[in-house]
Amino acid sequence: MSEYMTEMGRIRHSSSTGLRPVNQRKVAKAIRRAIALGLMPSVHRHPEYIKSEMEGKRTSSGRVFAS
Image 1 (tube, helix red, strand yellow):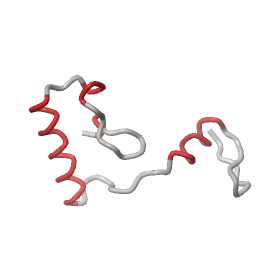
Image 2 (cartoon, helix red, strand yellow; image 1 turned 90 degrees about the horizontal axis):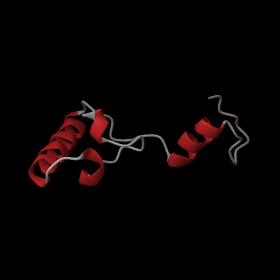
Image 3 (cartoon, helix red, strand yellow; image 1 turned 90 degrees about the vertical axis):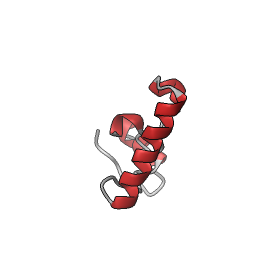
Image 4 (cartoon, one colour; image 1 turned 180 degrees about the vertical axis):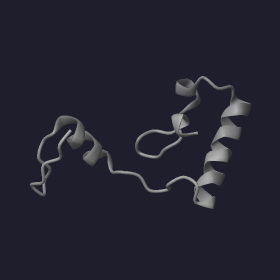
């Protein structure tokens, strides 16, 4: 199911998944159920941290993230 989610924890749009509307709704519902049951994380990393990890640059707090 994680292939249908972004790194930020959002459900991908049907244009990027290639699923038909009925199947997209089923996948989205299954993801929401898994999050509610605690099988998948509901909180993911902030986009700024992901970006800084990819670039290996300093953040506003001065921390350096290794890639």
